[in-house]
Length: 290
Image 1 (cartoon, one colour):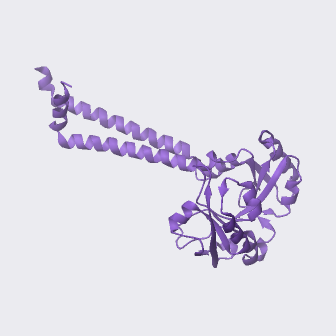
Image 2 (tube, rainbow, N blue to C red):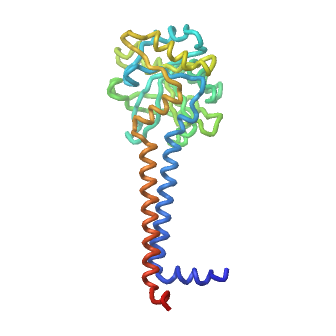
């Protein structure tokens, strides 16, 4: 404590330099915190992925739809407990910047595969009864101020014919775990077939498979891909966590980017600190000599 006054006096010696040095530390730490938060956001889907779920997509990727009859063939394979399908919608709400995940689903199939998402029974029944009904996540509802009964118009993407699609909010789901994604938008798959172009009927985006034994997930995945080998729509089956990781990597190597930026930030911070110390010493050479 006896040196505290001396330290404070030294800080006040060059107030502008002290302010700039503290500001450099603040900006560097803030940038690092943002990078960590960004990494956590990208990895959220990987962390919450079910160990007993597989995702079946086209061999060339999500852009290749799969035939609807695959559902029954997958269900018959040994080790498969349940299966559901989904299709990416990709509509625009007011502005292209208002991005959120939108899936066309079969209600009963989807709910059986994702029991961690809880919806009021009455709301779920109303969703099933309304072909234009949707169920949305709690955070998505809070983001846009939507509530039960609201009308939501979306502009469909070009591959679905474009134009306006109308939806009615019939339910709001919540996750049973802290990290569950509550920003999704679930629509009726039958509405997609009715309003979408004729060539879209009979195909889906991907399948989600629940395996009876998670330890046998790789064997079941191989069996699924073998079932459709040499067909016009070959498949690629992955665990849900591997699928989420691959989806993130489509946006680039986020881990490498964060590591490089973080290293540059701390190296710059080291240079700033060393330079400040060197200047402070040079300015007080006479005092040190005395």
